[in-house]
Image (cartoon, rainbow, N blue to C red; front, side, top):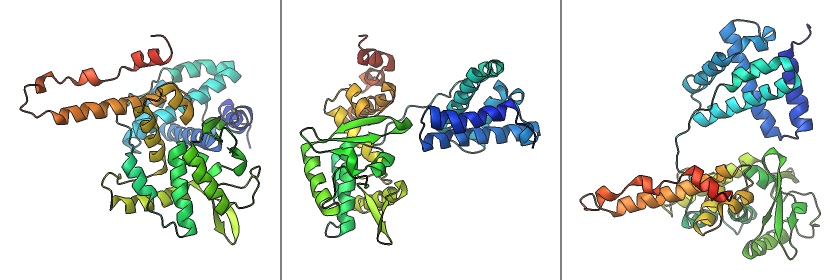
Length: 346
C-alpha cells in the first residue's frame, strides 16, 4: 500500500490520537467528527472524480465546502443545525491540521471563510408541570418495571440531565450526606455536580432500598438497569426513549397538555423553563445543565418571552383599539444586551 498523503495522516492523528487520547473527547463526539469528515470526503471524491485514496488538501477549497453544505441541505434533507454541525467538525479538523503542519495553514484559511448558516429562531419545546406529572403517573407501580419507570422519569425531570448521563449513573456517583448531590459526566467528558432536592432524595432512597437493597453506595453498579438472562445490564439510551414514548402516548389520553412526541430531552427543557420562570438566574441554570456556553441557555429566555407575547396578543381581540399598539419588538430579547447583563458588563 502506498504511503498515506498528509490529508489522511492528519485525519488519522486527529481521530485516533488527538480527540480520544489528548482531548479526551467522548465516543459520541468522535463519532460525529468521523461522520462529518467521511461524508465530506465522499462528496469531494464524487466531485473530483478521483479515487478516494488520491484525495489531498489541494482538492478542497472554499467553493468545494460550500457546495458540500448545499448538498447536505438540498439532497440529503439535513436541517440547518446539522449543516452547521458538519461545518464545525470540518473546520475543527482543519484547525488541528494547520497547527500540526504549517503547509495546511493556507487551506485552513480558505475553509475559515465559509460561515455558518443563520438558523431561524424557534421556541424551545417543553412541557407544563401538569403534563410532566401526567406522564410520571402512567406506569403501573405495583410492578417492578412500573416502579422503575416512574422514578426514572421523575429523576430525569428533577435533575435535568441528558439521557446518556442518566444511563451512565452509578451508585458511586450519588452523595446522600448533608449536601445530597449527583455527579455526572456530560458532553466532552465535562464533569458537574447537581444538587438533589429533599423530596427527590426521599424518592431516591425508596428506589435504592427496593432495587439496590444492601448495596454499597461506593459500588460501580448502574442506578438504572435492565435484567437479561438473570444478569443486570446497563440500560441503553434507546431503552429510555422507548419507555418514555410509551408512557407519553398513554398520558396524552388523560392530559391534553402532553405533547404528541414525548422524549427524554423534553424533561430537561421542561426543568430549565420551570427554573427560569421561577426566577432562577440564567447563569445558574447554565451551570446546572452543563452548558459550555451561556448563549445556549438563552433559548429559555427567548421561549418564555415569546410565550408571554403570544398570550398577550391572544388576549387582545382583533377589533380592540389596543391592537395597533401591540408591538412584538417590545417583547423580543436582545441577545447582546442580555449577554452583557449576564457577564456583568451592564
